[in-house]
Image (spheres, rainbow, N blue to C red):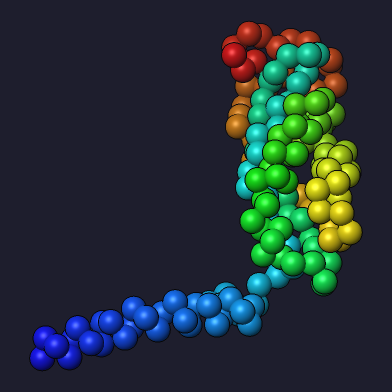
Length: 157
């Protein structure tokens, strides 16, 4: 009885990697076929008002790849995309002029598109902002007044 259990356990252990390799080869898994994209992990983009840091917005991007691109190769290089996004965020302010709890999506997307193309060249089809989550929602200075009326407690240290 014990010998049979051990043999079945051994067979299951050796068959699982083979099945996983087969599903990776065909591009299917539990969630269906793997898409031609790279999801970039969240990156904190600083939001500045009058040269002062007032908030951070964590953004997530999806880099759409062409049909001929090797998606697994570019997924392995996701840290390069994340690094480029962090560098873009620290180059200048991408604050939404109407809301300090959001980024200026078209401006940031255009800047990240240029960097993604520099990294992956012709394999990049498009770049999409998939999520943005502000660190703070309350206690922010009012936009449009040039940041006036912001007390020191309303500004991040």
